[in-house]
Image (cartoon, rainbow, N blue to C red; front, side):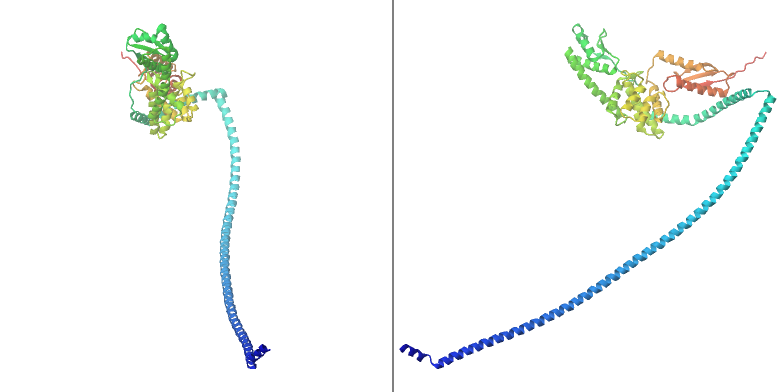
Length: 532
């Protein structure tokens, strides 16, 4: 009771009123604060809306501006495109107008040509009618002429008393006589022209070629003599019971002749390459000193290989000297074998090189290919490398070799026809034959046996004496000229000219000779009277 009373004494009414007033004031303050806050919030929203309205209005303005600019740009593009299309249309119209002008011009030309063709056709028809009339006139006159000729022939036969066959024979005899004299005169005139022009030019070309290539006049000869240091070596070469010499001859294919000749041993063989191989092998055996069958086989085999390589080197050197590149290896080998082949003591390889130079120079002198001429000249005698191994003459063998190893038709024909054995189809064959004659007939080039020389002169004189109207024939200048004494009573000057040409042609066809043969026909008339 006492505590409750104390409390009541503490909480008095003034305090309660104060608390209530504070509570009410606090409530009013909170309300006012909320009101003020609400008011402020409403003011901010209104301002934001105003700003948004302004931004929206500005956006509408800019959008309208952009739209107007876009419309303006579209209009400008449309205008530019329309102008471009108008220009293209104008260009097309201009091109069409020009095309129309060209077509009109072409039509005019076609009209003119058509009119000209029509005119030509009218002229052609007129000419054709004229020709038809002329043909009829000619046929009529031809018939009249035949009638007149028949009447004249009958009249001539009646007057002369000769039949058709007799008259024909008489006419042919007169014609043959006249043509014979005329042919002789023509030959004389043409020979005079040829002597004045072609002869001089040919001499200049040949002289120039010979002067440009001046080779030595000595002839190379192969030897089959082998020197030995002493005669005692002969016994060692023969060996016990001849076994060494038999082994050597069997290995080399040659004959070894050991006679009483001091200081030498003779090696004999038909094949020059085989003989040269045996000679070198025997020299090696003599230097080595060891001579027995086994050593002989070794040395011979070694020498044969060296000889093959030596032949190829000689062939390459010859091709290089003649300036003829690109030869097949087999042709080079055959070319090297020509070093060991001679013709009338003239070395065939040196002869081929000379002919190569001369043919090339002759070709250059007349404006032809000098390289091809050298090739023809170098290979013209290549068949002589195998003519002792195969059947046939060296021209045919040479043509076969050159054709087999890829040479051109000019080279093949030069090898086949350089001795005038066939019709000449290529000018290089003529040049090769001329160069071959120059090389073979120059002083000191070849030696000919007396028997063959005399037989060749006799054949030449006998051939000439067989012609009608020839009294005597004399071969002079070693067979390079023949003097023909003609019967002046049987032959006149024209017939003598024809005789000279016929004799030269017969010599070309029937005889074989180096160089050329000059035919001189002499005809004279002698009248002798005595005054008494």
